[in-house]
Length: 188
Image (tube, rainbow, N blue to C red; front, top):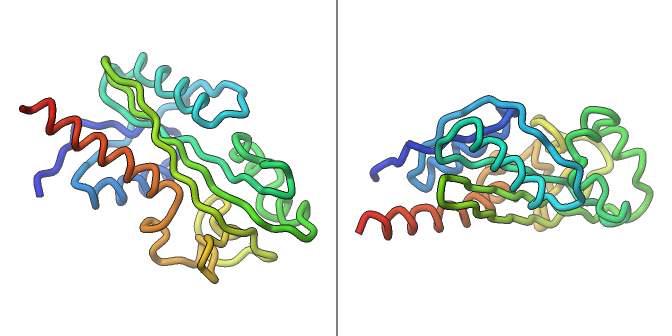
């Protein structure tokens, strides 16, 4: 399979890039890491945050790129931490989240991938429902040790195939289908 490689993944988070690179590679798309701390607006909308980040990144890179923003949304906390997940992870961490939960542990992860080039600004959302574990289990980064995907018994941090089922995978799959179709159409 021919690999496409003129795409940047812009982020300050190398973990996101490594996961995205592995997922995109499975679709025949290679990407390069462009480490950049992006302006992050305060918003309750992950899509709006991702869109602004992509525009900010494009103004600095001037190359086709994707960015990803995601959040863990816990039902019993009215969707908190949502778009504030990174801040919550840095301040109270997984133990703090576990201490906040009493009975209902239903949650979902939402990922938004936003593509930007000189002609396009397009977002793709991936959602995965699950629950929050009672204890941290496994390895991984961020909320991986406490999020159990629906129909699974293990946390993201315990799963070997996380990148085949994750919220990020779902968003990147949608992006890849669009991107490969768009490139094919533009080559004709």
